[in-house]
Length: 205
Ligand code: TYD
Image 1 (cartoon, rainbow, N blue to C red):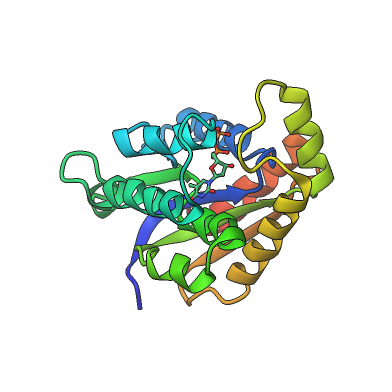
Image 2 (cartoon, rainbow, N blue to C red):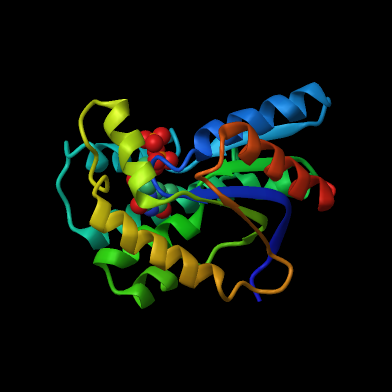
């Protein structure tokens, strides 16, 4: 079985699900309790992650498979880099929180690519905890509309509903040792926040 990185918490959800807000709230809570943590996100701000963002903004046009490989390359660097990799950080015992991880690739890239190809390029160490904020597609679409700005590549209701199905399938067969916390994202921000805290503290996180 793939290695599990202890104290590695990843947040997953559809665009507009509220993961970024909830990560910020959790970070504030850890701050308050003087817990050491490291906050990160995928796609990263490193050069490969920046390339991914250009594809999302439609400044670079490529194939879905090439984009999937870019996400995986960005992730490999994110985990294994000698200078800034999460692997070492987790092994040093720090709480690491990531806004998205390879489950995003399984959910999003499998809509347009062969799912077995996506799985094969995403053999990465497993997180200890996945926080899945399960927000209904129509609520996500409303939030995306409200944000305004240019729509990104994956901001379509029909697409997001396939992404949700893929998430649910991936989470239905998680290996032992990986904890899944699913929170109804239609609840208020405060309620989502307190449920996440409660579930994490039950895991001593
Ligand atoms: P997101 O975290 O939503 O970025 P932003 O801060 O711009 O809201 O991620 C950007 C998009 O990339 C989002 O639509 C989800 C998608 N994505 C994938 O399709 N595959 C992946 O592996 C990752 C990490 C993200």
